[in-house]
Length: 439
Image (cartoon, rainbow, N blue to C red; front, top):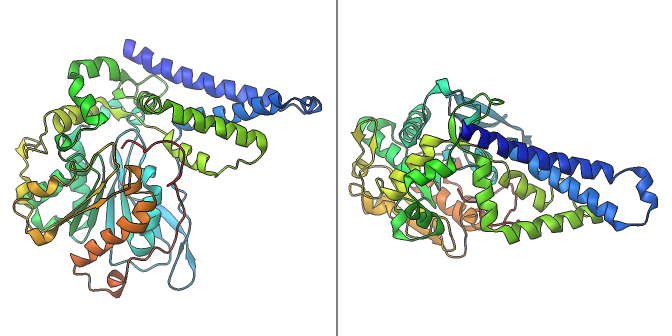
């Protein structure tokens, strides 16, 4: 019960700060105060606006907001989000470009389940849509899933990926971003053993902890320092009564967000104060760089306790993927069984979440895959976020990934063979305030 009290206390604190922000904004905006030539009232209203928005967005799932895609016919084609497979803990969704013929390239983006929503990959989706049909794993907030839905750990996650790949068929090209990279590799190996005809054409692993011991980071050091008992006592809470998942044990998104913020408290504090000054000076806008970044960064979701604990215990501490000892549903997965899926790894030279060496370790595990079907790329100046959504992704990594897909598929369509040219640039977060998002 104390865990439930802790969960509701965090939510009450968030609610209080949102109320304080709204109150300050409202009180400092009374017309009569405009007669007093004191800048403090403008600053108070600006502080209230920034504070209210910051704490309100923490419990709201961001919308995808995908703009129309320009087609070769010279028209703009609206994009709608369609659910292909619906499951309790996550859906497979498709970005349907209205009025456009099916594309030769079909891509499944495996989004991380690490405290942020799949919308973290919005700019990645936007960059790929002009040249491919795009699907995404849309994971659900654990607090909204009834206890009756059962558990969800890394084995269940892997089986979800297997089902999604089987649904999309063997002509799909899979791109896994960070946290799901080792589990996506395991899901592909499981298909190679059980249903080889359902394997994807290509698999691209971006900044994932295949072997966390290959290069130490703060994330891997934390995994070594704490015991599982300490994690259970300090990181887990029970969902409160106001949510559908009442009673479910979770790793709360708000708790993870507080950890993220504390790691770069000075940077975030400066960004928030600069935004207050911008609002007070009338230079801020609803979609400026600050709001674009923090609308996503502050929107967090809860993870099931079993998923969080099994990730730490089996991926980071036990190194089950790194040592090819991963077991799913009682069956030991052999990554060496992958013999026909072309695999590419992508790493960032300045990645402080999954450091260079952790992801490329996957290629050594692919003992049954010919060398010509293996590839790796290191973007020297890219941080963690930049390798899948920033300027480095758009300018350098994305074209290489599409070329890798085309080189290892037999689509034979002029559409798939054309150069990977980005038609639409919607979101540039390369210079956004704040650190790389830990995913």
